[in-house]
Image (cartoon, rainbow, N blue to C red):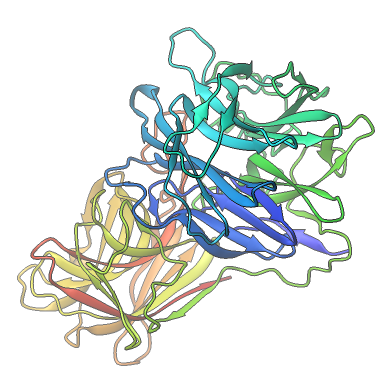
Length: 553
C-alpha cells in the first residue's frame, strides 16, 4: 500500500475545504491580505497537488489597508449535483479591532472550477466561516459561526444554521431564518468553521475548536434532523488534534494555547478540517497544521494543509484509522494507489510568455499592467510603487515559503536615479515585517549599491554600513533561508558568488513573531519569498527580472 506524507500543501494553505467531483479533487484555502484571493489546488491522487486557479482574481474585492490577519477567511467549496455547479463561500474580515470581528460573507458560483466565477452574492454579516450544504432533496443550507460581542456571554459565539434560497441571478441570498445549533461538543470551546455532511440516517456537523493555536482540533456531532438536536462524539474529545491532552477552555474567544504545544509531535495545531470520500468509499479529512522551527514555538511556514485517513466505527462515528485522535505525518494512501514521490513545490520560472506565473501573489492589491510588464523578451518588469511598509500599493510578486531550508535566486537589472528607488529580492510576512536585499543608490546618490533593509514589528533597520557598489547595475541575487536564518549572496557578470550578509535572524517572520496580542497568535498567513521594486519618487522606474527560482531542501 502506498503512503502519503504530510503536509500535502506546504506553506500558506490554511482552512482547507476539500471536494471531489468525479475523479478530481480540489482544495480551496484562505488567502487573507493576499491577491489573487482564494487558492484552489487540484489533485488526482490526494497526494500530489498543484495550484490550479484562484476564485477571486479580478476586482471582486478591495484588500487595501487590510490589517494582519484580516482579509479573506475560510472559503468553503461545494458542488450542487442537481445543477452541476460549483459554489464557493467565504468571509471578508474587514475589522478585528475591539474583538468585534466585523466580517461580510459571500458566495460565488461557476460551471467550471477554473471559472469564470460569478460576481459575489451577499450572504450575511452575522459572523464568519460560512459553509453550504446541498441536501438530497434539492434544499440548500448555510452554516456559520454567529460572532458573540455581548459581555458575559460565551465567546466566540454559537454555530447557527438556516435554509437558504440560492440562484445564479441573485445579488443577495435569501436567508429563511437562523437557528442556533451548538456551542460545541467538547470542552475546548472556540468552535468555528461548521460544515455539514450526510451519512446513512444522520447529518454530521464538523467543527474546528480550541482556537487556531496549539489547542486546535476537529470535533463532530450528529443528528437525525438537520436542525438538531445534535449529540456529540461520545469520547467528548476532538476526533483530530496534535495534542490529545484534555483542554478546558470554554469561553476563551481564541488564544495561542502555548501550553498545548506537543513536544513529541512534528505536526502542531491540527484542526479546521473538511471531509472527502474517494470513489471506492474511503474517507479522508483535510485539515490545517503547522511545523514550528526546532526548539521554538514559531511557525514561519504558517498553517499548511495535511490529510488524515478516517474510518466509520460500528456505531457510525468517524475516527482516525488507528483508533486514536492524534494527527499523523504519514498516512495510508487510497487503495490500489502506490505513491512514489510527492512534489516539493520547487519553482522554476523563466519569464517571457506574456503571463504572470500562477504562483505569484501580491499583498493588499492586484498585480496590474500599470506596474507589472510581462513581455516575450524573457523578463518581467516591475515598476516601483509604495515602500514595503505600504498596505496600499507594495510592488512585489511573492510565492509561499514551503520549507524550512531553501534558496531563492533571481537576476536583476535596475538603474536607480533617486535614493527612494530600489529593486531586489526578499522575505515578506506583512507590511510591518520583511527583509529586502536591493539595488538602490548610495545615500549621496553618486553610486548604485546593493544594500539590505529590514523591518521588524514596524521598525526599520537600513544596513548602510554593509552596502556593496554595483556599477554594472545588473547582478544575480540569491537568498538562503535556513531554519530562521537568512544569508544573501550576489554575483556580477557570472563571477563567483560573494556574501552580502550571513545568518540574519528572521525567525520573527512567523505567525507568532509578528504584531500580536499577548497570549494570541499574531498572524495566520506565513512567510513569503518575493521579487519587487520601490519608487516613492515618481513611480517611473522599472526593474527587469529574467528568472525566479526557489529550490527546497
